[in-house]
Length: 223
Image (cartoon, rainbow, N blue to C red; front, side, top):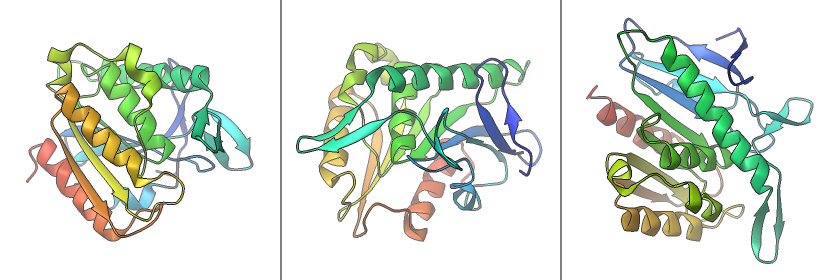
């Protein structure tokens, strides 16, 4: 995991934790605003070693060691995003998923995508718009963008997805109302999912990591 790779098709950089043996799945982990690809390395320690883990670096540099997927500002009405940047990151991540899948040859590896905060937002955006590329996704202290609606996949494809939502009831960056809205919207869309709320703020805890790891194992038939 010491090497920062660069994918030619998407232009994205990433670190890789190879699976033990033939990968049972490929999990893409996305960091939040102001972070980098190393932020979620500890989370991967909880993931079954038969799962290949890809730690992706955001494409927008904010400062030394600080990256994002799109710019956002917080006002009285809540977060206001740069929609064009968010959509370009969605498409760029999809290109990365497809690029890595193209190397699987005759042994395709199922793709999952998960992220913290803005990384969770992008995970939902990629999966809900392209379930054939990413069939499982997790939103950890994030939300689902309403701007995604025009890009949603057909209902029959969405029904084959599976999602995991984890959010702190005390989150002061992205209110728990965003998780509740995501839960409701996924139900309306017919997307099978779990939602877990915790008595914490905008953070990842050992309990969240444990629940997420369990879900990943269930989704990849590693239980």
